[in-house]
Image (cartoon, rainbow, N blue to C red; front, side, top):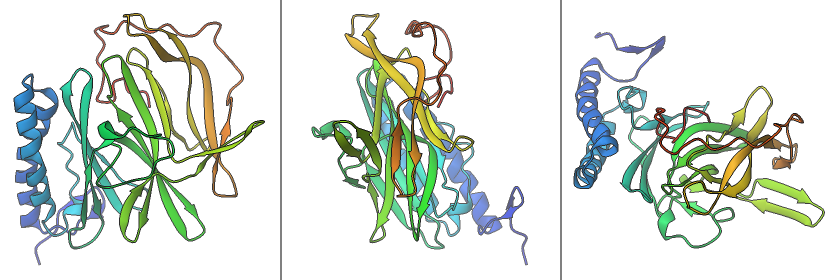
Length: 297
């Protein structure tokens, strides 16, 4: 019997010949994914992303493709939950300085291809993002950088941590909630609870909007067992863009309670800075990643 390729210590379900075909697909996909992020021509970026999608689908039709890591797709985020029941591909297309489009797909960990394309419609939505529920065809597009699985009883849902390029002067990070209902992905669930003297409010996702000059943390901290993020304070934009939000040196959080809801914590640490950090120049010569920062999440 022909030996199978291995990924680290884990054996893949891909046959050796299929692995070689996946490598050939990856070479082409890598060139296209580089172009739709880095090409200076808007026309070429759109052409590259349109060509990328069917080629990725064709590659994923290969039996056992879930086991292929696509490590050369540097501009495509591929995130797996701890249970490896699926993976999410997401990528962004720069349209112009105030306009980004997001693309994505969820591949289930099945022997036969089960793929859910994600269609970004956030630019057409005029309601309240924090309470809305979306499906795969009206997805709140984002570039995901982490997944945290939450199991309550016999049910599991997934917190999706994402970045949205949004506008030239303003960026966003979000925490969405992914569930599978009747086998299909649904985004948003009322799991974030804010208790206050004025009553209780419940949100289906978290959304932080901040100055493009700032670096904002928003992630799950396994050591603290908290969903932790920067507290933002409003200042006048340094480039005439109007009010913007920047971190003030303190942190807020949500903690998972025994009731299955994430409960708001106003302040995690009690140490504070003497003054709010000043935003860095918009073009400071420092290298930033696809999340629009120096790697802070």
